[in-house]
Amino acid sequence: MYKVFLVDDDELILEEMIDRVPWLDNAFEVVGMSTDPAAALGDIIGKAPDVVFCDLKMPGMDGNELIGKIKAAGVDCEFVMLSAYNDFEDVRRFFQGSGFDYILKPVRDVEMQLVLERLNSRLSKLRPQKGYSVGEEEKEEAEEGEPASVFDRIRAYTEEHYAEKLTLDSLAEEFDYSRNYICRLFQKNTGRSLNVYLTDLRMQHAYELLKKPDILIKEVALQTGYSDYYHFFKVFKEKFGFSPKEMRDKEE
Image 1 (cartoon, rainbow, N blue to C red):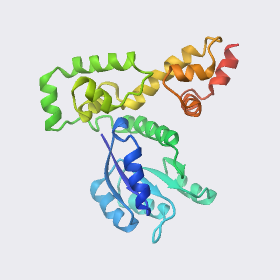
Image 2 (image 1 turned 30 degrees about the vertical axis):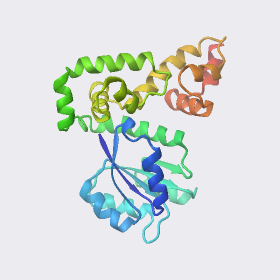
Image 3 (image 1 turned 60 degrees about the horizontal axis):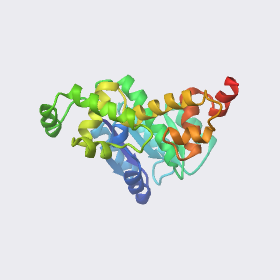
Image 4 (image 1 turned 180 degrees about the vertical axis):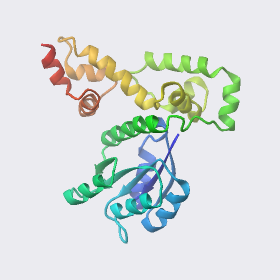
């Protein structure tokens, strides 16, 4: 799993991110958080996370300054900036400092999910072995059944139920394995998190369904697990580089 550190001077925002964001389903683990950027710096250096989510405007030290100090300390990680301000100069400085992505507050679940999927894809290429080691609980589970056959069953189930709301919690309940173990199985066998794997699967089906002109685009979204058309639109365009309508127009 990839380690995440959160920095925001608003404690409520940190708590909301912990509660609402499906970190584990995307193969991430929050290893620390802080409302004080100066204190966060020492923790980040010590814990060496893979990703730092950081507020832009904070008292005492802004996000760009904190990122500069983290980089100067030699911590190799990705940075995602969170901000209620769309200031061009701040954004320019952030990306000049090799920032990964910039999200405006209030953070939409769709936007956060897209960022997490992009992060997972990038990190799995940069650090492909990260997160493969297992703890004692996972070792015991692995001994109870051959991991390859266990994953084959989970993957088959996922491919059959891809349009449903699948999470590590629901799969853990279905197969009686821990969430962490299933998360690691997906990372090890596919190089992707559960959510990235599901997104790729849904997009493959959506692409084929859009070739059928008698099916409405909104119906394609519903059939592939997206009740929110905006979410479907954003994910599809992120995946293929063109919108569902643009693809449909090409097919006609």
